[in-house]
Image 1 (cartoon, rainbow, N blue to C red):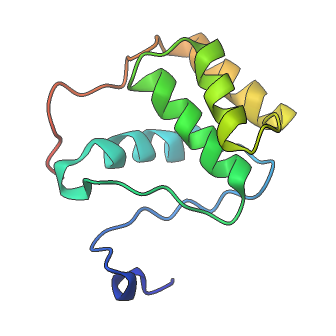
Image 2: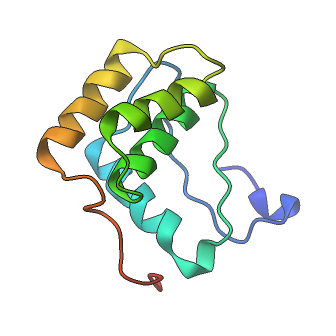
Length: 113
């Protein structure tokens, strides 16, 4: 693991997802809980592959902010420098949306972990 504390981060969630790949459902659920925790505000999403970060932002826009899937995918493309997400990432997001309603992962208040 990397020492993120030296950059001022007190907590972090490590999600090893490569370029063009989609997160696992378990990883996505952990991310959605982590991102909403009061202890992790403000949150910073970073990674080596811009499309991975863009996929996670598209997920949170859909799952937490209740954006339409189309708007969330457009946001992902914008954050990916105008390039579309990979077919694997889009297919995964479509699969997530097929089993989760928009905004269904939003917590009523900050989650204390």
